[in-house]
Image (cartoon, rainbow, N blue to C red; front, side, top):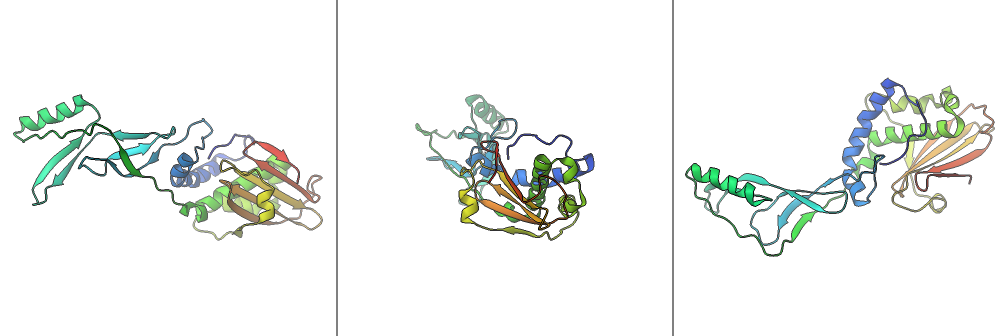
Length: 260
């Protein structure tokens, strides 16, 4: 979902293996959303997104293979498939991006004694396709694990790695690498004050955290894609000079830190 590495050596090899499994599932689930919002990864690449029900207006061949690239262009690929006529007779039909590929298919079919019928191509190519974005990932266990990792990394970035390694954050840390289906204490909510305090852009991924040494509690709020707010409540027994009723916010865009 984009981002830059800020906390060097923030996780060991075993933790990275555990994180990668959850992150891989989220990557697959958010591919279309990242393409729609034109969000680049850390290499500056917007992912391709699969398309459904792809067809060219005026042609009888439906459900072509296609995808939307990072530049917003539809890309098609050649395909050959088995089909049936209205009376149940089987035949093969193909769609080809180049004349050479079509001629090769026709030559092979003719050599086998098949009748080859060349279809006309519409003079004006109009591609129709469905571009479907679903959001089931936001409530998934994998998303909660990655959010927990983001929260812990934000604490390490703001207060230092030694502080984030304290036992106060064991619950958060253990959930990140837990096996099975643990039930974390995490909330999804909407708060107008929080929303207006943040940079409002769909490219935004941000973290707000609050630590109180006196009250021995704190919270971390992670926001994804401008509008998904996920809140972690922390029970603390902390002794840190920066954690005395302190608050901070880190946002992916414009990659700044401010003190609310």
